[in-house]
Amino acid sequence: MVSAEIINQICIASEIVVFNILGLFGHFNFLCLTYKKPALRSKSSYLQCVLSVSHIICLLFEIPNAALLFTGIRLKRNVCFPAISIYVFFICFQAVMILMLVIDLLIIVFFTTFYRKIGTINYISMMLVIPFIYSAFTVALGFLKMNDEVIIFCNPPIGLHPDVGRFWSMSNVIFNTITLFLFVFLMIVFHFKGKKQKSDTRKLMKSLKVSVIVFIFSWYMCMLANDLFVAIGITGPLLVFCKSNMVFFALVCFAQPFYVMLWKSSEYRDAFIDMWSFLECVKNLKSSKVLHKASNVSSAALSVKRSIKQ
Image (cartoon, rainbow, N blue to C red; front, side, top):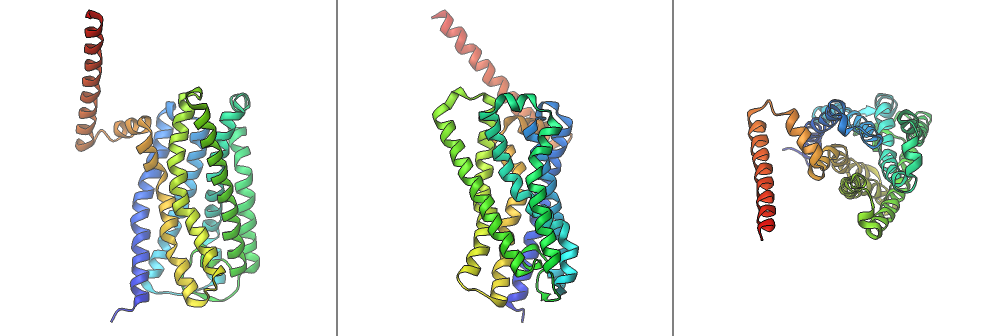
């Protein structure tokens, strides 16, 4: 009879495969659209590209873990951690990049002149300093503290030594909380300024609003749960089980950005449809969309003519 542990491992491995397919498709589309469409390029979109690359690496590094889950192979921490150290770097990097995207919007709103004058390369480099330092420091701690304990899963929450894992989860909660507070502050500012903000800034705020909400219910909840499990005294195999199942929320965080962009941005929707219009189903969708727009324009023109006659 199949044990509950094996069923759980198969479920986690299946989640990894499904979210890899969805996430990789979305991120590669976002990178292609940014490259092909000059109108979609900006300092903010380049930061989104950096986040996309980080998420791609995180998703790809979960695939070997899925294979280990299917085979039931166990590794020692001093074998696992060097193999996933790049993954640990980018999983730390992406967590802080979400904060940097919110800071980017703050700079656009409150330091507009500085944002316009600073060069793109200098700006992007400046925004990557904190994510790089934090990620490099966490990986260095991981190497210093790794041991030969046999672990059930080879992923960051388990692959890191428990002391380093505790630092990692707590520091993530701190960064995530700062992100949340800054975003609430921005929402208050936009509420009072309303239409005074430029349309591009309002569009960026709308997209980022959904991304932050998804982030709260994915990565933030994942990190909070990891700390909560330790705080309430869960230990041993049960702690490993609970932490490993938090991968679902991490995968949601890694896979969602492009789909949020498609939902909230008509520019990205149009560019995406245009890029895939060589497919018959997408071509039909594009045609129906053009007809719908033409119908709206005709209706508007007719309304104007009627009002003039009156």
